[in-house]
Amino acid sequence: MAILITPKYLSSFYKKSIIFVFLSILGAVFNYLLFPVAARILNTREFGDFTTISALSNQILGIFLAFNVISIYLVKTNSEIEAREKSQVILKILIWLLAIITLLTIILSPVLKNKLQIVSGGGFLLLALIVLVSLPAIVWNGYLQGHKETDKVGLFALTSAVFKLIISAALLYLFGVAGGLLGISLGIVCGLIILFFSTKRNLPNLISVFSRIKPSDNKFVASISKYVIEAILVVGGLGFLQNIDILYAKSMFSPHTAGIYSGISTISNSVYYICFLLVWVLLPEIDINNSKNNKKVVGTAYKFLGIISLLVISAELLFSKLIVQIFLGNKFVGQSSLLVIATMFQIALVAITIYAYYLLVLRNRKSMLMAFMVIVPTIVFPLFFNKTPKILITTILFCVLGGFALFVLLDKVLNNRREYVPQKN
Image 1 (cartoon, rainbow, N blue to C red):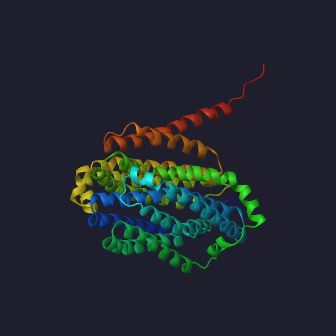
Image 2: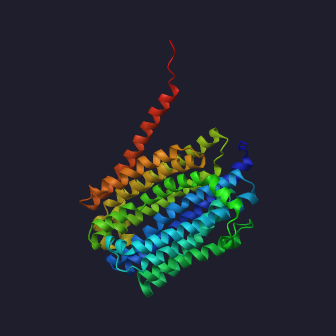
Image 3: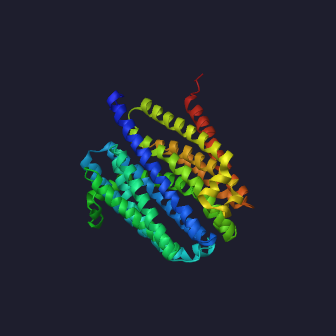
């Protein structure tokens, strides 16, 4: 059924969207205040370790965000009771995936530790803990977004960020990198507790993950298995790209250079998270049966992205040194020129992600083609063009833009071929 665009609907939509964006931006501010604090407590090598493990957690959670999108889809295509039960099955799948990823991480930790030049391998166990406590948030947020309770999602973003900043900063000071990572986990748990008590809606039951898998669960999983794989590849692949510059820098440059670049990149990441809020405003408003409404919603998202991009890039062109000095301190100012390029990369990635997620909710397989054409060159080409941090991030930016341009061209060619029907003589 098409969405009725009434004044009452618009009022509710804008009210919840504004609350969500406001709370989430505040949350992003508190999230990224942690990095300036860490930069002043830790030396550059320790700071590089802290940002690298944080980046790895973001990339792993980027894979799991596929289930956030799937939860939205389930709410839009099922009754509330059915959607909750199916979301609980999704949570079981997440736990099993985490178990596999944790096992692989433990097995590969000596290699990762050496390749990424990380001092302590214990950080990888804390990485698994961060991901574990984040899983309920992924399912709950998707469930609430599907029901258009984005204001509650914004509340979680803010409260978890505040607790992460307070607890992690204290533990960073007392115990270094390990303490800071533990603090991030504890902050997420505090946010989840507040989210649970802030909504009257019955959220998917976390205890259900310990129950036996029923035949009906297996049937449901089989019915969406292809969609799950597609979502993981698209969402996980694009999410992996967000911090790929930090991982490449950490493995290719000296610990000091990598630590400096990681600091610059964390500032650009804050722009990514602010712009990425448009995705979560967009997806709950998608109507699977109303393409006209969907085009308007997507167009509005891109207009806001354009305004944000113009303001941010202009500010960085004028005040990049001052921004870096305020956020990270004088020892990072020498590489402040990289901030604009890194930010352009993050904005371009958000622009692509908006359209990919939109296609994914509609179960349009063009999302797979787009993701493939962006992800592959962005992973491959930096292996050959990485002499300096500037060359590295510039290569990554052009790969993202070039991959998307090729997708648009190929999609147009394929559409023209479908429309062309040769006439019989």
